[in-house]
Image 1 (tube, rainbow, N blue to C red):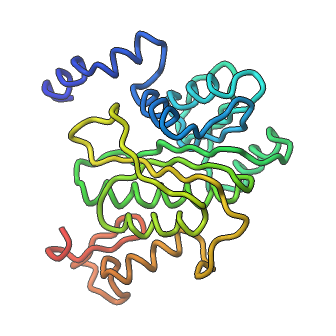
Image 2: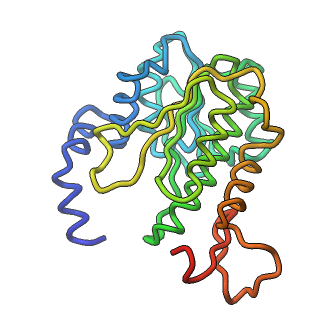
Image 3: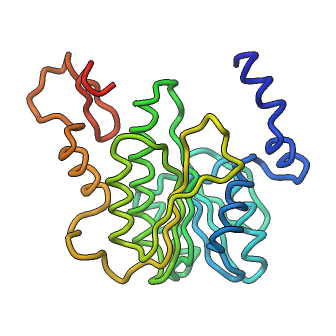
Length: 249
């Protein structure tokens, strides 16, 4: 851990405020600011938090839905229990995790799906942004499958190549899609949030695929994914992308 990172975090007012209010992460204020602007979550809602660790967004969700709502947090990492929420340690893409969620929900649908999921950062922006894109797209597919018609979805995205494909996939599935950067986000960060409201009954015309498939097609169309048969020494595989060295970053 660098001295500079330590000093910046020590001065971070959002981190200090989160600690004083009992939130597990400064990111809690990002969700609070999204809520203030868009009113995504209502009292009594059922909420699914994908990639919930360490639990800041889950804590805020519990506060917003109050006693009449239900909040489920899912993460690959062990997350300490949160009063008023069900925490599942598991992979949201695996059927066993979905089955566990269905059991808790008694097969009811969610009103809101939220995801502040991030990759384990490598320090290489292209790599981190590519993995983040895949995680956000996976969250979009999960949200569409779990949400009731009219439901809402929030996910974090990092600006970069391929993001427009994700935005278009979201627009096929939700009536309203906006990008929003809370003031609690770090100034130097390229992160923003995709705010998707009013899930449609079916994806709009032109979408017969999953969001993952649509984004992959988008990446192929803009020349980011290479064709098969390329020499392995000339490519770097990241998520569902293959970058030619020296061409795209």
